[in-house]
Length: 349
Ligand code: KG4
Ligand code: ZN
Image (cartoon, rainbow, N blue to C red):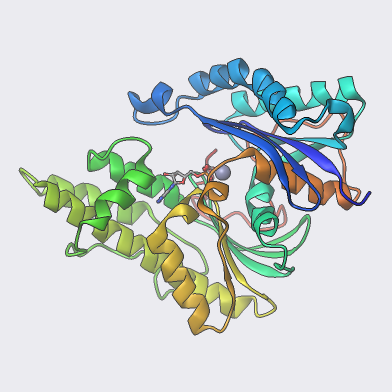
């Protein structure tokens, strides 16, 4: 099939999202609803509230996206839904919705790994991006370096031994009183700050391939506690210091992985934290110094969305890799099942 149309559903965290994507990379229609108001007063995502919001919104959102594109379910070639990893209540709602649509319309189901959605999303935005590429996947729950060798072929080169970098952003933002969601708020604060606080850069320079962010996060907490009455400038400076340290950790570890995966045709960054401008520009500099093209999807495609799930589904559909209605919802689902567990491995939702 030359130009298939795939409906994608995403509900693994706090974004409810649906998109219709065609094989020529056209996004026919899409919707993304965040739930910030529901979780803001708790300072983090409450799984039960997230699942209820997905249940309320998903079916009407599918109807809206189909209507806006002027496409009926009969015109859709496959239904793709996130089947994990993520907050299991939300994953079940999205996957069951995808199964019901696939069953009712007699279409193939593709149970998509959310991480594969992030990993392949740069190819939706950039038709010239070929395999193999080196991917830095940075989100709220994951921080990994992957050799992306093809659809369904991922080699994990590094992961975090404790916290994900997005989690470190979110927790540091909370400690600094910057609100929810923390990553974008911390980036905004850092813009008016100077990185004058000496903070640690865990594992930088080490022979071990992995990441670590727990020590950096705790150092932000201690530095904040040492300021009796911090001014807005102190907070901005501490935010800038954290962001600089996080950038240094990411670029050092990525530089090491470039050497370990010499077949890479490009350095690619994806996942929610890839929306951070300071991180994008530090990685662009690293790639330029190594003579590698640098690819970062547009900002909206970095954070969770339905188009990345539709696109990963489309790539799998075109490879003839489809699922049946027994596909399970999985709270954990590594992209490279053969990779060794690391000590502490803080792989959360
Ligand atoms: O991929 P994503 O939308 O959801 C997960 O799969 O986790 O990533 C969300 C994470 C959160 O930790 C959020 O704070 C972080 O991405 N994030 C950012 C920025 N925008 C989102 N972190 C730093 N700077 C940003 N601009
Ligand atoms: Zn994500």
